[in-house]
Length: 358
Image (cartoon, rainbow, N blue to C red; front, side):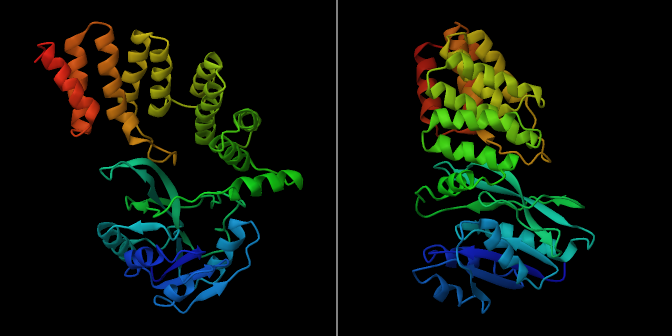
């Protein structure tokens, strides 16, 4: 890779921009900032890193803004970040090494993206994103919201973690407002648009509307399989919220038609059967979660706890309820191996000591 252009869109990011750019400046040969209407010192701070700062009128279209930034790139490859993303020192060094060894025939580099963390700093949600792309017209963002570039060509995966570390909670209805305007305008929704529209409605507690959108999405033929699987889980959230627990269970089970059971689905099924006090069946599903492999190439959202701590701690409860205390204690030890400081694990240790199960 001869030259890497970092392309970012920014707006009112004075609190986090230095942190982001400091974390990657050694790896980026060119930094391009496109400002969509800042009212703070974002552009002033950005000027400490680059002269290539452009204004772009915001038009409720993330892809339009991002693609404008990409159009200014002069590098052989371009990379995107959000202002509240950050690379660790180790990740930056890996990126610098990748630049030296990346074969020129590579088109897309996928990298893991951690979007939430626990109190100990462990990732709670990870997905692979198309992060570095060859600077050719074929690679451009699509979608007004939750925009993405479709990975194609010669795709390579690198274990270089990008961390999403917002310093303040972003609120508001911007994304939902964009989707609803698209609906009113009669815009053609892609499968991805529908999926994320449903998620926005669910986040706002509009459960019946979200359920209808997820159903509409699941009837489509153009939905990505991992979004379909996740939609069955999020639809189950809607149904549980409406008190329709049986329908929620059926929604989770419907996800099994698309691929081998994901650990996340297994955990949710286990929780459903625990609520019914069917501990034997709940334990079976939690054990499947522990055995589930992660398909690195799938690009799905992955919750690491669903392959370790969560099924282990729930198996402890299930086997205790079934009177199998030795097995329950063994699973509590397993939970502790993932989270030794966890209060539930520590309370269980005291509980088993009181039961004289050593």
